[in-house]
Image (cartoon, rainbow, N blue to C red; front, top):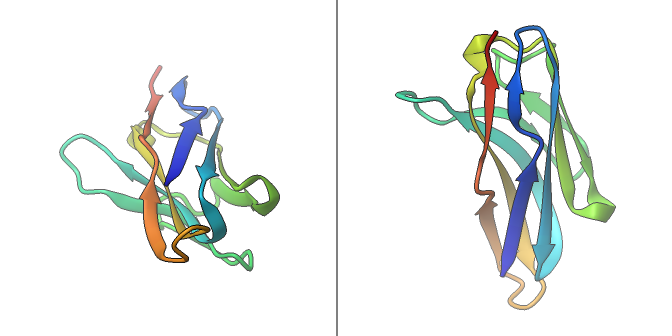
Length: 121
């Protein structure tokens, strides 16, 4: 089994910054893609940012130029640096990883439990 644990959420004023982290542990053979998604009340979940095992990144249109995703493959960790935060960035942020299990060699999607980010003055 694989577990993802997120940290770094909280309350921040508009224009401020936060850094989210998500660390994976458990029966990990390899981790393919990593990503962050968010869901605001009354809205559908949307992709915030993704990063491949080769380091190629992609971002949602609303966060381009403000957010940066990175990964430390040695630590099985993905980060999301969020700058110039806006009230509309308020949401629950969840990390996602595509993990190949060391026991079964099967590849599956895993999700973190979510961390709340609130942007408000």
